[in-house]
Length: 99
View 1 (cartoon, rainbow, N blue to C red):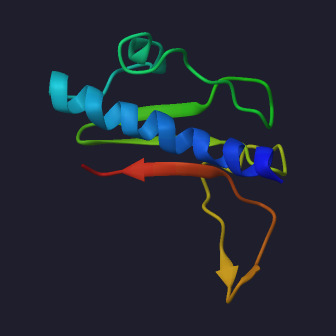
View 2: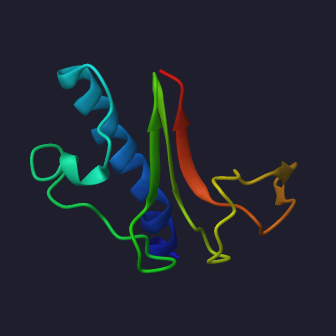
């Protein structure tokens, strides 16, 4: 179970590095590779599909996500909940920032 939580934290680690990169450079990088080694030791691999995390930057923001436990690209769809029960397994684990 601990590895599941660590895996879901990867977008947070990378998202924070993106925020620091923007604070130092004035914008988000075009590719995640520009974060290493200054902002991250290395660019993590999505543990759910063994590929790179999905990332896109746009004016003033970014979208970053992992495929999540269903191992499918749900295009960054966040996990929906009904109370404490997940409404669906079709979600990705990510971070979208508009600042």
